[in-house]
Amino acid sequence: MNVFYREAGPADAPAIVLLHGFPSSSNMFRNLIPALADRYHVIAPDYPGFGHSDMPDRKQFRYTFAHFADLTDTLLTRLHVDRYALYVMDYGAPVGYRVALKHPERVTALVIQNGNAYEEGLKDFWKPIRAYWTSGQPAQREALREGTTLAATRSQYLDGVADRSRVDPSAWVQDQALLDRPGNVEIQLDLFYDYRTNLALYPQFQQFFRERQPPALIVWGKNDVIFPAAGARAYLKDLPQAELHLLDTGHFALEDQGDEIARLMRAFLGRTFVQDGKSSRAADSSHAQHSTVR
Image (cartoon, rainbow, N blue to C red; front, side):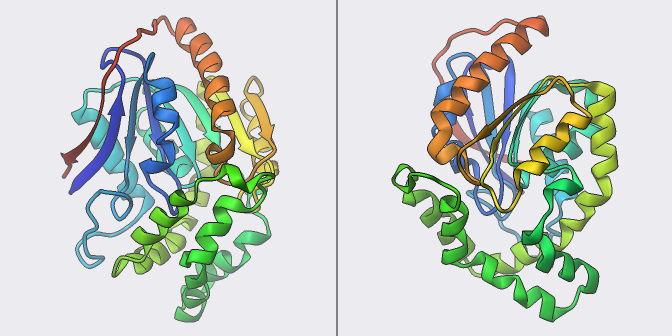
């Protein structure tokens, strides 16, 4: 399995792992990475079937969040990254939190951007997906196919955004081009069904928050219809010291609020890593890689 990842910053600086959502890839961090790489070692992988990573046939590879977490963990091990902050968005939340359950001592901080871990964050948008979870039948699966069309992808980027001119259309065009690869929609429908396994782990995710109390920055597009703001506020039950910012935007908040998120992250991470006993160093390096992970 060839896993593509973007990497920037000095290898000995505090590490930040950026985990993307659906239907995107590490491309969603194209502007955030250079905003952080002067002080941090930044790593952003693509999951199998996304971005530039391999897309094996469904008969040879089961597309599950558990497998994504295993591969992400293996990649970080290969890169000798044993302490890291996690930026989790959408699918990146269950992937990142599964990795955190494997190695809770390695997580130095959380940056949570429209990535859910509470029932409060699953509203009307999820009704047809829940129907598929309940039945597992072809009719309910087919009803979700519309969520992989260009109109649906475009709406994820634009819904809830006050000034749509701030959103780069190449983002959703690239996402859709990758979704339109032969066989990819079936992979996405498999993942819609597997998402139910994440809900079963919510109690464990929440226990991790309560017991470990990782420093947390929540930057959330408050107009998101997929993961509404109630999901952001729910984190405060278990992370009462978390820093919460509800931004006037939608699901892909980095697209129009990237400068503000980068500013908030730099301030938060500066405080967090000093408290963690690590310093930040300026450096100049970046590259994209494929790592073979088995």
